[in-house]
Image 1 (cartoon, rainbow over the protein chains, first blue to last red):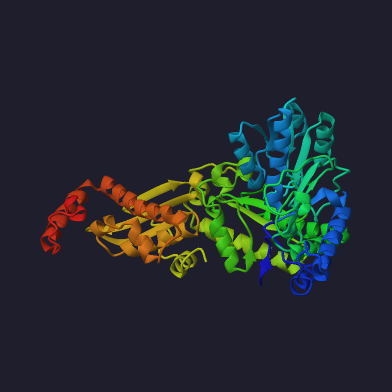
Image 2: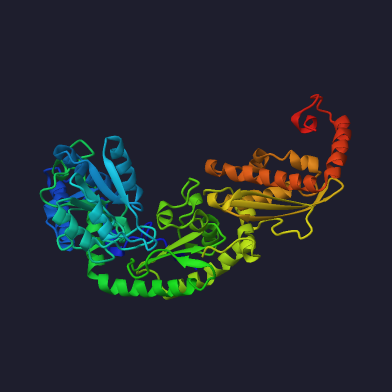
Length: 395
Length: 153
């Protein structure tokens, strides 16, 4: 049995999104900037994609700038806020320790340009404390950028409270909502979000399309120079097939959100209940304030990459925060931010479900994960030391 | 694919996995913080490694390099085992991705640590092996006049 359980990495395109995307590659392939009919048809498709997405996000179509995906949107949001800050003499930005690298690396670059960055702790439950954010905001704070839902542990941040606080304090609030949109309700106006990044391929749309929402009044700086596409804020011929595919997938996700949420959460809860029975395992991050499809669990005494390879042999595609999957010797910064020791963080497993997963698939995961964990523990000198009492169990 | 077929074969079917209760030498290298620990157990009889087992906590290549290293030293003399290089392990596995080379270094170090432990416990054997090494030197046909392998003792 093949089980795709890495939907936080990317998703399978929905049939509707796929067919829409392909039709704009095959038939309506004109350049939206062209004057002739086939170009204008592409232009109309862009307009209606923008309108439909804006409707689902609760914003105006003109507040949306299409990008190549979430990373570009994060970069542009932060760089734009920094430019605003420079003009106002405000060079302080607040974020969190466990943001996506698209945010953290952009902030690192700004540090070299004289910005001061405060990274809030996320505690053992993977949640930001609004009180700590409030204390961290200074008169020279220009931007707060806090992700909607974490990509590794799926914890949902108190976005409504953060939005309200930032509005009161007059600070721009950006959220990387790549993991959240299409899965949980996101209305930018209700939540007082000033800027939001999203990416199509996390909700069954195509790769290579995303967008940056920026509230009217927030001036965006373009990070790609060239033509006047996207009102001069993002040069380059629009990726029309992927954008219309994104709109189709987003509409579908929003229409079916309640049903999908309940169904996926049901599957996830079975996984959490059953996998937690493995001795010396621990679910990472709050279970209550969490995306419906995310399971992130550590197993003491084993290492994540070998776990993934053996699960792959048994048909399960999953992910890990182990160092060996990241190309460095340090495990995931997200798991370390929760306060997990390195050796525990190395043994993490992320399973992320979607509405395309079935109960049979979940049963298969429940069967094979304990087998693989037990096998790897049987060859682990760390486990032997723990079992024979030469080391203390951490979890 | 990240790994060669040989790496995957040794990862999926590790050779000599396990422990030896009455081992003559045990070596442990690496640390859990970095995500790799290898423990090597040797049974040595008159300078020959008659049995070897390993336990590894680590990624796919850590397990594969441990397995390959045990296979390469089993039945060999201690002297030959001391000459095992991480490069030879990498070659025997048809290569490793650049960021995984440190696993092969750990495998080499684990073998050496186990032999070190054997000599610590059996200083007499060290002398015996030394003489045997000198005997071997006579039959060395390379004419190098003291390479690091022979001349090191």
